[in-house]
Length: 402
Ligand code: EZ4
Ligand code: CO
Image (cartoon, rainbow, N blue to C red):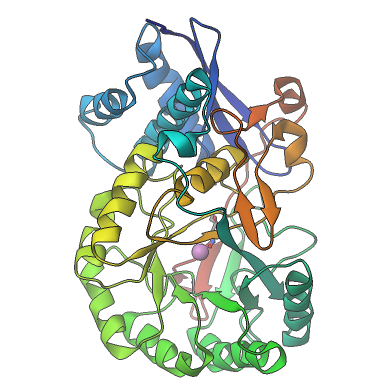
């Protein structure tokens, strides 16, 4: 029996911060897992370094489900983003190792491909509507078949999702930037802005929009109703989702499809949303929802209720978890779409990937495991930089959901 002989944490900042777990077995096989929790990176690094790595040496890397149960139940303290991201890193690394040992890509370990590639959506944005339209045109020219559209709201400088420079990266400052938010200005602007996209480009592609948790269920229902004729693929994170039953109100108000879940950590965060069909797409990710093992459980539950998948895939999810997501995406029958913000070129100096974007879809490579390797010497050239996500404040100075 092979055993785990070494496990280490690699913290690196090629373009942005990433925390990566690398596990090595007695047979010399290595596996990678993403452990990046944007803005709280070192908490997961410590959870792994101080409390999980000492448990790994000598254990059997083949027993992935047992490891998951051991780390989840064995901690006694359950769920939460830090714990679940740490478990995800171990889980993902063990799937990578199992694939390499078997000589199979992870999608074959998961039952084989149910589709050729994973349809992705790109992020178009603009400081003005004309700028947004130019950016949508750029994504159309690149062959994207699904595009998310976000633009700066006049009178609300803290609009979510607007790119400054080449890459959209909200965790950009060494202390949290405080941004001004006006729900009224947003609700006045968003329907006209999205209508301008359909007017110029028509309906021959999927159009998505991210509300980023900023509306009440009443406001979200009103927005969804106003957007119905634009036939969005989805309206993302219309409201914060701690109160799962609140989505019933949004659901009853509109037929615009609803997606939620990028901040979820476990199946229990979305159990009611799924089993009562309060959403159309579940956005939980490999890295923040307990790894391939747990995300597959969420996706399988969703399948029973005709809820499709739409995994989070912003650039703060490293190429390791993006690759893991694509391996899982191509196997599940209820796949919907995969978010894809291409990583900055400098990120690929550290993470060597093998998935490919073709015809608006990501295709995992048939290489054994996950098909991602880390260049540790390159990683050492990019030391950790403390960076925080912004904070939203309403026009009266009170804190709002960012
Ligand atoms: O704000 O990943 O749909 N994508 C998103 C992301 C999140 C970031 C937070 O770290 O909402 O851009
Ligand atoms: Co989002």
